[in-house]
Length: 412
Image (cartoon, rainbow, N blue to C red; front, side, top):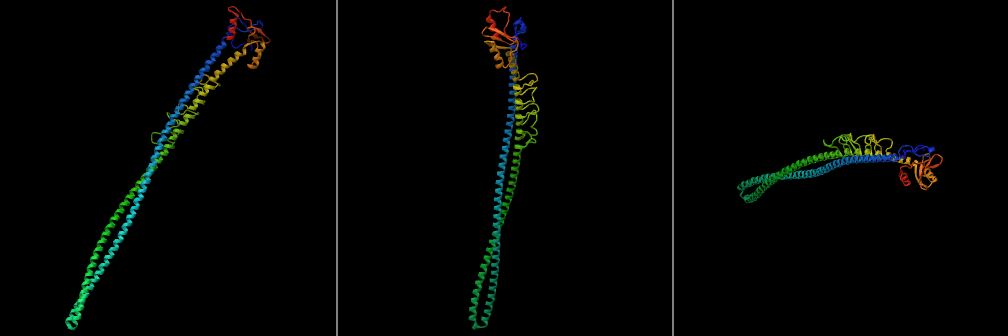
């Protein structure tokens, strides 16, 4: 190398090979200063990276809050689903009650029909008994007429009187029996008529009960329809709380799906933003002003303004926030400064060959004029002039001893 990076405080030294010197009038201590400054910048960049990491954590917290909203809306959806199931059960119960009432109405109607039939049969029997009584009465009248004729015949013929009287008595007895039979038949007709009236009354009562049962069945059917409607409404609400993404569900809030993956009124809305966007959005802001956790962690949108954690750690093509560089950039700068220093001053070696070998095989550099090392055999700094190694010519005025010179060389 023609010149060292920033050689230091050996005032009066020279880099002229013809004079056997090493340095110009600048300070050797400048090289450690540069390295220290680069290390400080690297630490500053690391601090900025930590700040971006904190921003990423904040975005992650926002994502968690959105996830909590998702959980709350999911609970509301589950409650609506439970209400829907309850309404459906009520509808099924009402339908069962309606079916039972309808069955009772049918049974009562059947009973009423049977009673009406029985009443009709009893009325028919009563009519038949009345007809039979009328016939018996007619027969009795006829027999009485016959008895009267026989009596007249008995008066006309004494011989026949005994026989006719006997016949008359027999006929009179028969007439009495017939009249008794007619009265019995008339009584039976009255009983049958009474039974018919009772049967008709029972039939009317059963018909009224049947009508009441039919009315109850209608009410139960109406209740079942209402419960079914309520169940359908609850099911619709539950579905809306679960998957609606085109607006609010109940006039105040959005569905679980909207808070989870986005929807009208949630996506790109101030103070909102779905959980998914807070987690992974890298093409814009989530709520119009803030970025996602992923953007603060690895994104490039905020490069030049805030900088992501990844940029603060490893970006080397320019500044991260418009003024500062990344930790990797400053680390590379420090490494380069150290490498430049090591390219000029090799360190301590026993001889020239060992120093040159280290430079070309370990440090992977070239041996150039002005390069130097400390010779541990002679305790003298050796300088390469482009052809051979020479002992450095250094003014010893003001140095307490050779030991001080050695200590300064080692410190450098």
